Image (tube, rainbow, N blue to C red; front, side, top):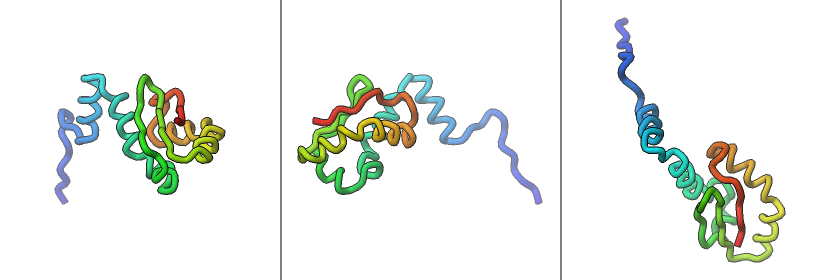
Length: 100
């Protein structure tokens, strides 16, 4: 069988996207947007339903919740949540999480 080999000057779409994000210095912002958009997947539907606002500012994730007991529970688990987020998105995306 005749297999086609990729030329050395070609790249995959993933490689091209990473190169583009690196060249425009947008990799960090892209990962922050990924984090916000995957909040429900990471934290689960019950927590996502009680989340009214979520955004990243200066490498800090701000999460507004509609439930005071949930806010208290998540505040106590902040370190574990940061570890989980870093495992999913990558290290260095956020430095802290603030629950409001």
